[in-house]
Length: 338
Image (cartoon, rainbow, N blue to C red; front, side, top):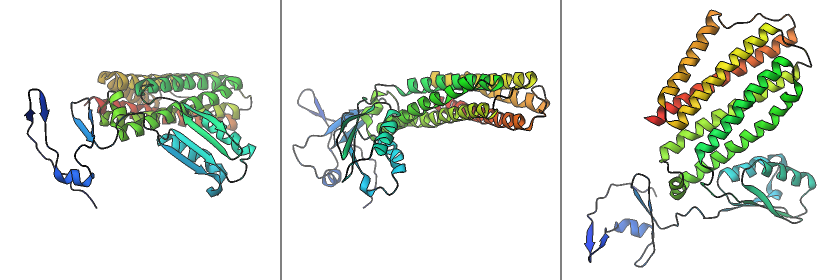
């Protein structure tokens, strides 16, 4: 049955010399099945709002999830299920099977857990593996996680473009390792956001209001997507098979990428620092870049080698998409300051 939410006013009463009290609505008491002597939890929000709950509002509550492998039709989906439980904020995940868990499945579990910040396999038996979340909610501030994710993604773009124009396969391969680091931070941010919205005490530890937390998710997603496109550029480098890019095309891509890096760097700094002028500066960089591309101030000549041309066009599309994500971050920065 849906509960009609009403605004109820209560006068503060002075009981004794120093105790202030207010009465609670009788229908709420009945619905919560409370009685005299029941202990309630009160949590003060950053804006002074008080939350009254019959449940504990501490961030130390542990939630358990059980994954039964016998009920799983496709074991290849196991990594996605583990990640979904992590993102939902479960502190204990038990993976069980009636018979022995195969070495292949154990390796899949181990690889998945290694990509989740704070999670560790703490015990194993023939038919059960226990995963624990050892990180404390709120110990890694969301803004700090965003800054770290951006620094990695920014470095990835610089190295990926340089690797592409120099046909440097060694540095290109290194990009794939870095991309997983951004994924780990993205998963952490998603988990912390979900936990904070469910548990007001975690939100208080972040010293943020609910709407501020919601702005962080699209920015984290944009950074994760930027890293994906950097990985795509690295793959284009490998696809060249040692072929060299001509000097004019190289300079064009380096200048293009430099503008894009400057764009999303200004946008992220605006979002984290609350400096709206940096967001407008990022938008101006984007507008100027689009004008230079349209007017031919920043342009290249198509290469005669069709294999190289295809890869260069792929890189151009990746840079264009990264531009778009930079603008998304700038818009979130503007919205966050309102």
